[in-house]
Figure 1 (cartoon, rainbow, N blue to C red):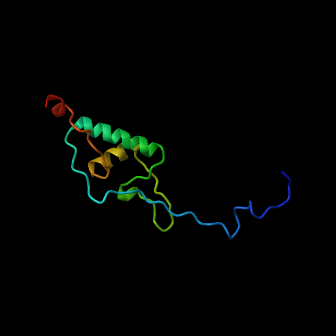
Figure 2 (cartoon, rainbow, N blue to C red):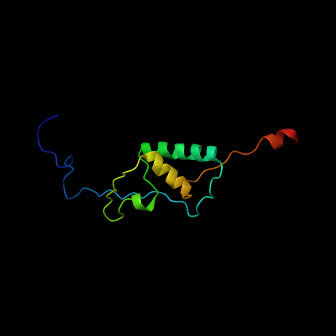
Figure 3 (cartoon, rainbow, N blue to C red):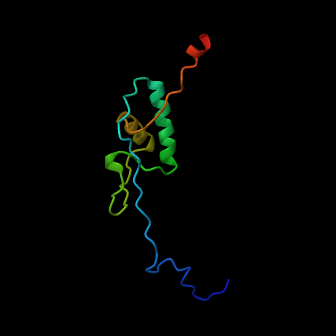
Length: 105
């Protein structure tokens, strides 16, 4: 590699393409309330794992600004954010099919 200036490698040029502002995917219809506490914990734990890995929060107060892309500071723990999202029906989940009825037939 030589020390000469290469404009193609310069990222501060006016030709840099702006990155699109990503918004979290929110389901069209809210999921029904989870009444089983074990299912609630499982769904919230999976969502907290997604948030820790960089997923955008789906709560309205924590969404990035669509014009600037600036993300508000999350003051609560990500586990609490995940539980709030599940409680508001913003996390889509699927239950496995009941195989016990198929085996008895």
